Length: 265
Image 1: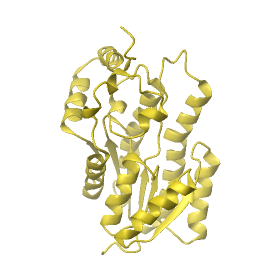
Image 2: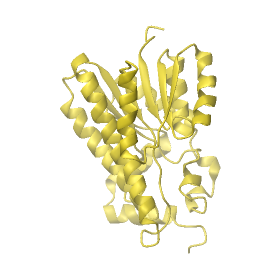
Image 3: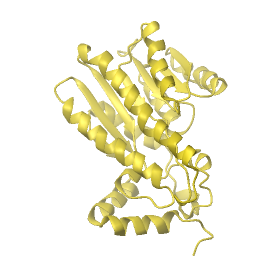
Image 4: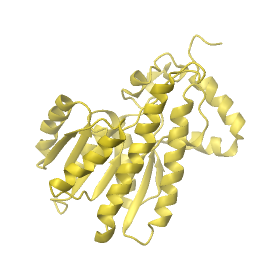
């Protein structure tokens, strides 16, 4: 338990990959600050995580609102907590053709997937640079590597997260702070429900979805190794390799065929 009293701050912590990441950190002796919107879900997950013998602090915030990202860090400072690890996991998508989707929902997604991530990372760095240590795990997606018809704003936000993470990693290379990006593929979480995406062809065979436990383990191990990024799962590594060899227009067409509704020909 050599990491006792080192806190990991994890957003999107009550379900899916985020919750599995909380377990990875707890199993390895990190105390936790877990963040999500639903206070009841936070309390339930905190009770489960305390079985690992770690402290768990719950903070309910709506990271669709940038002021809540700022107030999250203000609360930590008031409580004298300087997290050693930041995990930006919270993220959502919206399914459909861009011409048909709700612009307000898409602006919310840009806020959650990009703006709140930038704010929390900026505040984390201001807190940790003087200490010369810290780790950041940004959850992107294999969607960051290809244009994504039927889920275009989500793919665009994750492309930003990957590019920006690589950039600040280079800037921080002599600081003692590492930045790692996790690129999961389609995973068995509530993401598809929240994105209204259950009619997509990509879900025709749910048995092919990755387990969030395995994705979280890949992310945790890459973070501890100080890797720049990790694509979780062999199938996804092959998909990314194929995308890297394709033109953007070819990759977009292939993704459109994979993600279009089952009813579309």
